[in-house]
Length: 432
Length: 83
Image: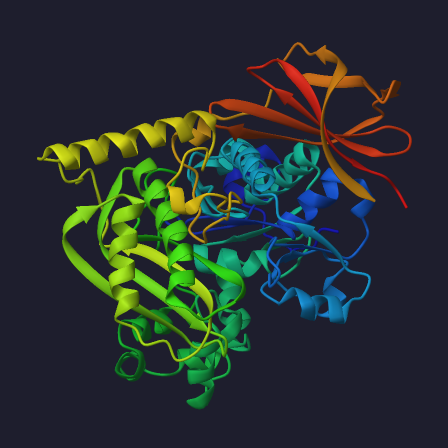
């Protein structure tokens, strides 16, 4: 059911006859579209037997966590990120479906295609969320609310999925608005409503204030955005550095960050993968296998997007969930799995493990585009040619069709990194 | 109950005027199954080849059909039986 604030009629555009959000001359109109329980909803479409039942989408490992929970599962307290065993304890009838990433990626592209029918200014924030700057499309579609309704109708008609939309003068508030009435909601925050809305809003509900920062603020006696807004900026800056200035603005509902359409966003600063192991691992030899697999996944992604990097970061998590990272920076830029692996192993060799390890992560930072080292010597040239040939085979026949000997039988399942964005070539893909 | 399989099957398809394809029936285990609803469609890449998956239902069950766009063949990938 749709629910929304009453909105004002803009007399200047009254001839179109539609209701619209009234706004100042320079005010932007930003929309945030957030799919409802995205992965779980796609699975309920794929298999209608799952509709109306408590469903979670999770990984294939033994110690996986919930990636998405259907709305039927949520009354039991099941949330994303919860260990699967805990979710099953809370809801014995829970149906667990292993994530099928290509299904979600395809649905995401089709949603993006719908959104781009209303404005070219669409920023893909994650696989199931996007920001739209609809300021320039208001006259064409008779107002922001109508755009949101059309988007919701079209997504429902083409994919059978529901989404929630939030409309506000900036991204910060649009994100807040979309979360206000979920699922299948539509909520508008007008400029004049901002002070009263934020006055009693708990600080944790503001986008960008996580549990840790929320705890710090609570320790300072700050629980609402209204209270935060009353703290002078210099005090927040002294306590939180640059973040303090941002907090001061956020508490007033201020945000100038632009909507960055696909392909215009800033370059990636790092790329990485991590995995929770099926069972805790004690020895470095066993950890090395996972490091190699992750290094190869990172290298493949780097090369496919034209990046090279020179800081390798190894992340480990002990069984008691203590997590730490160590990094090493090189002079040359590197791109291949074996190169990343070699450095990650040098880092691992320098660590004295105090306990068994449950999670391993490998990433490459200090990234640049188009700065791959040109091989000078015969051996280096042969290795570069080999990597190129392997990439070509895998491009043609699929990931890990050809890989390094030690990775034989390695995982082929894909993951969605948090910074997932469509690549330029991907945007051309469409359904028959 | 769900089970995965990978069986070549014969499929009757309508090629729509917008370039869309729609499976109408398929033969599996010697019996013709008429598609009563297409639940979801998605595309995957397997290397260079695009695979188009159709989750379809007949009167009893839900089936996962896959069209291989280079090899021009159909496979049945999975069956979900109620109960």
